[in-house]
Amino acid sequence: MDDILKVTGLNKSYDNFSLKDVSFTLPEGCITGFIGVNGAGKTTTLRSILGLTSRISGHINFFGMDIEKDARKIKDRIGVVLDDGCFYDELSLAEMKDVIASAYSAWSERDFKEYLERFELSPKQKINTLSKGMKMKYALALALSHNAELLIMDEPTSGLDPLIRGQLLTILTDYMSNGGKGVFFSTHITSDLDKIADMLILIDNGRIVFQEEKDTLLDSYRIVKGDMRKMDGNIRKLFLRISETAYGFTGITQRVSEVQQYIPDIIIERPTIEDIMLGNIEGGKE
Image (cartoon, rainbow, N blue to C red; front, side, top):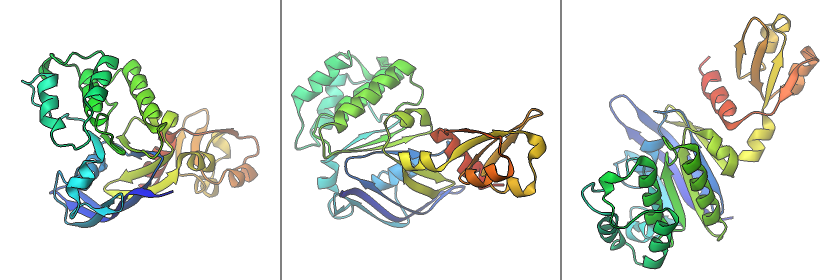
């Protein structure tokens, strides 16, 4: 499986935040979820690899090409959906499309019209009349209408209702079914990734915490519930994160068999991606 994006040693600093030696790869044929709480560095990372903000250091390769040397060729092969849209509000959808389409060598007007119909968008509508969900659909129509081989999406489902979020996930699944594609999906709404992600990358405070296949990750952690009266310091060390009430404890661990040796009558459950994310973030700060 080839890597369609390779980021090595990415560093970027603001007054109160830094990306610190960010490195990861995106394999072809995968929907990769880029997760972390708000302010963790997701948007800064995406904007840095797209060249929308400068970086201090680091190497970025798309499709085996260097972003510094082959920016035009690379941008012709990727579709970008940003949370802020970056559209001119006073233009119509058709007028904004004319501005964007000229940048791509493989623009497909037929695909664009089909996506507008599928999303129930009129080309005569003004950008400033679109709801957030409609803007996201429009941005996706633009990104998918030039045969992009990689979609890069920054918080595409944030603020959308469950129906539109479901439609968006279906579109991404359809896109990936063509083969040879990839999606880099930044979000803090991890329930969306429970449904469609193949790979997960967690960033926290500007550092990559892990990159792992989703199924492998979910198999390696467990939620454990038990009697608080049986908890002691030795058992506590086996957990990444524990919440306690008068009735018992709930914790996340990668060492469930060891916990079971101390407390045989625990309840064991499969975690969500959010459980794992919070366990690694909050557990690492204890």
